[in-house]
Amino acid sequence: MRILITHFRAAAARFAISRSVIVPMLIGPIIGAMLAAASVAAQDATNVVTIDNFTFTPPELTVAVGTTVKWVNHDDIPHLVVNKDKAFRSKALDTDDSFSYTFASAGTFDYFCSLHPYMVGKVIVK
Ligand SMILES: [Cu+2]
Image (cartoon, rainbow, N blue to C red; front, top):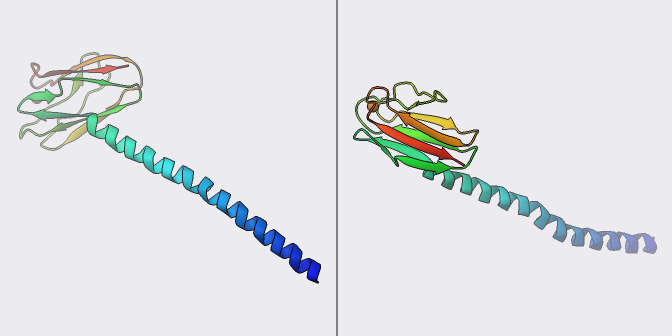
């Protein structure tokens, strides 16, 4: 019996050690995932093109392949976002409506508003 108890204590001690290793191993990926989520959120903020007073801002945006760009219309009249080469075309965006497009390949994407063709912008995907 004494041998059994000693054996149990040894096993318990081993468990305590392994737990001190396992817990950081579990926390590491959780913190990593949280950091990844934070960086995705930060990236989103920089990939927004606003439409204000008949102007796309910024007029030229450079992003990495796979990036989603979001256009938001702040004007009180409708605008569209239409790619010159027909890769994307939004519906008419009313006030505060948005349109998002994910750029899956590299290139230069010139776009304009089909209601006001002098409104132009460009997304460069690298
Ligand atoms: Cu327009």
